[in-house]
Length: 225
Image (spheres, rainbow, N blue to C red):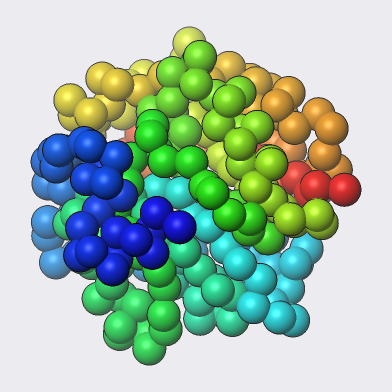
């Protein structure tokens, strides 16, 4: 309801909730012509398609969609996609990407710390965003996402995990000072009553910002049964 109202009033969900517009470090990252994270869909997108292939326009919610590459990918595959991000610059590029691919995505601006869905989705997806949630906010959001997932629907999420042998990313900025890395297995605990299709922990190389570094991430694909 809020995204539709915001669109009708030509404003943002943040504004409807009383929050003023802010310029984030992601706005700076996304201000270039190139796509900061590239255009290749996250591998988890293909895993989702194997579980709930688009035999009908399943409804997808992408939380923290960035420049929109995954949201647009889902739309190209035939899903009905709604997606938000806090970065106005990222959303502008996401809309251009959707237009270029001749697909429709319901993009809107909102903050992961404040937005909560008020309608059900078949697939709720988020990649590389939940580290902005403080430890006290995590269980509540996960519970809300579970409650707003249709029966048989999927939550596909990943979170950065704290490891003593992995240093802070070299492209970290002041927004990264707000990060709260998760602990190994913490995400899985919140979905103990769902069917796990995948739960894994990976240490991987990353080249964001042009400087090689490493991350550790827990990834979960769970189904409401």
